[in-house]
Image (cartoon, rainbow, N blue to C red; front, side, top):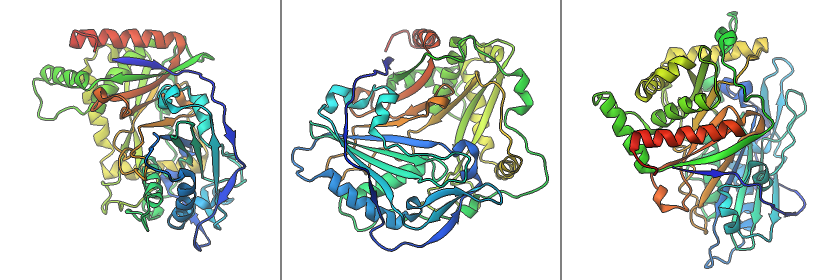
Length: 461
């Protein structure tokens, strides 16, 4: 198990004037409504993602020219992305006003080699954000703003990055992957994307009723834990590389602990259980308070008619596991993993989904949000299987690395499980976990992770 602290290295870019790329053909002029899940206030945040491509000496094409043209063609199929997000006066819900106005496209260059930045693997988030275009977002106002922007940054080695900024309200992780795949397919010479996008946001709209809203966590707000380390102005982000052998040994251990149950544990269930428990220790949460693990579960396949492949809106719901810190500490990893598995299954219940949609409508109607302490909240998202790696070769092979960036305000309560970069062959089948904690708590967290490694595996791999 290895750790990589994010490094705040200098990155000087020369940026060209911002362009606006318009759809290459006429697109509909209309106003599109979004789904209930799209309108969840937690989704009005920006996705920032960086795709890293190595130089290809055999390819003399200019990636900027290819991507600029492909972007224009992409917006014919994904024309809502060239619209503007605004709020309806009647109910304050988001909508997309589509007039084909174009999307922000930026080009930057730097004298640095990608290798000098380790292909941005452990570049500090705030530095890495320079590789992503800036979008001016008018939260909670009637001012309209663009949901998408793209930046291509060329490095002196011949490699480059594609940085995308995309509003979560317009699409989820699957949607982001679908869009970037379509872009690279068109840049590679295809006449149309292999997956044609569909809107169909009305498929995930809740019922407006007179029931009172249930605020997530509101029933236990007074019992939630606190940490002596939070709030903190000294937060650090680290990448934890977990080897494939380590994951296998842990799964085998849990299987023996459970006397070989019929249902195996997934990598997410195992990793999330370990990290939740050890993060709780590292933050020194008070033992009698309640700590919460949030799990995002995809629901594309559980509707009576599954959502079509081209659907790129938000199609996941959050489920939560609540334990006191004492219960979490005394529970075995297999017991915690069973709780995680049970929580995930609730998302597949159609009645649960219906109630979640209806309650989200109530929350919007009443304009209420959770306002309790969130020191003990961990939302651990799994980004490994949303299709971000593969099928992105448009002349420079597949990207060697991918970096999602989270907003600074929410990073302390979020963790991301990702596929490892392709720079280390020994990590094939392993995972990397990105965590942000107060500096002193991070020191404790790494000690706990190493101790767990020795306990279960008897080595330091």
